[in-house]
Image (cartoon, rainbow, N blue to C red; front, side, top):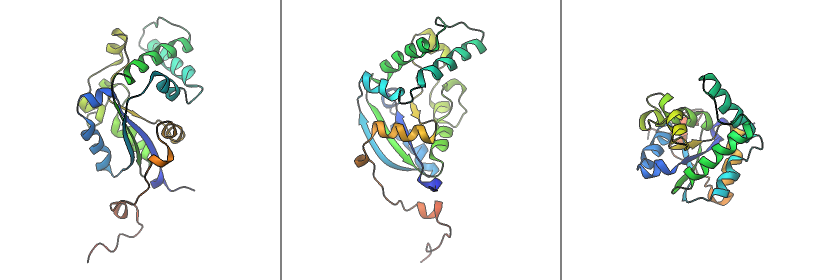
Length: 201
């Protein structure tokens, strides 16, 4: 079985994060917890690339549309569309505009429980509901209500893979094997070695 320390996940600093000069701050949050950066690049993407990215899971449109319709219903609101696929298609169009509005910083982070740790540090998808101390909770004030009223995608700075399986597919979409650097970081001895020894001279 693969050791949890070898888990990796995709993180994207979206165009709003880049434009707000939060690249260093965001990277620092993941570094400080002990995750290791093993790939990074700045990229400008096409609408086609983003559509492929969001539909890596063939069920994405159905699941996203159903989730959105349920969220509307739970809030006592009515969506203009009733078909989950139509709802998701509208969301995808807004995401394409958002992601192609400027450069993105794409990264792969490795470390114990990387997917869950990154999600915890990043915060809730809806910034206004994110806890203080998370990236979205500390740096964004956007909400689904504002985004919906303005007919745009929610601006939440970061994308983070939702599961180990999702991360594997997403990393493969954004990076080739040659772009991912495998190396040993000195802090791994403190984080993962069974016996912490050889530190004192």
